[in-house]
Length: 349
Image (cartoon, rainbow, N blue to C red):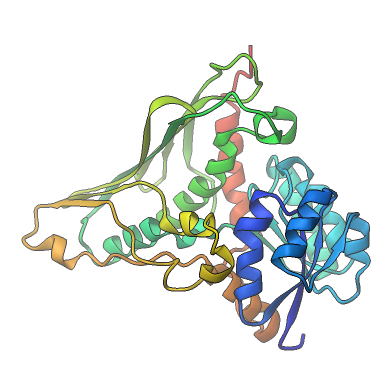
């Protein structure tokens, strides 16, 4: 491939407009050439944001565009598989937003199609480059926590019942899969587990909003073969909001409060300017570290977030043949863990 990858973006809602387009347009080696959306309002938004792009009102037209090298899919979860399969069949390298697929068998079909087409397939697991996740990896590597016994993650708040596809089971809505796609992927990366095999999974599901058919709270316990334990608490029914990540080790406990600052930067009016810049990747705040080691807090290195790293890798893979950072096989293993947690789901009553 040449030194420029021409990108077509499918979907210009929250994910496409705020989490994909700014990075694609700012990443060296990538160029946003076209956008597909059926919504006239979103077409107007895309035109205002990127006057140079070609706009398509049908996905087939985007896939028929011979100038497009890479298709990025930012649409509701339930249509990821057919759109990925169509993109690969059209000979396009393909990225899909998380959650990759509704379940592991769907993801397996995507991998098979990628192998047949001989085209790149990746998943936008940008939160591998969150500041808190990168900082906890660095703290463990530096030996500040000793032996790591457990990780606790709380993504709790009060919202809904709402409207739109994220509140509909048929579209694979619900906060568990939306955030779980990130957290289960991070758990496998943090534990250095190559697969979901041997991981014990238990989950408790609640449905407290009868107006919608998606879960309102899921508590999941993972136990890895090494003994590492993960507690994942995801809720929309908690009136006291709690965004917290806690890493417990034999020599200390590291706690992060609040969300990664990159998201707030991208939701600002300057998202097309700040994406991937130091202003958007500043170091994480809201950190509490307790240790039995003298001056341990002074040794803690707070690593800035860097979602642009995902896109830099994609450009490097397609232009220079570098190794892919987010491999679909890795994401498939995270989906297998999610499927095991979903086996405890009684469904709405």
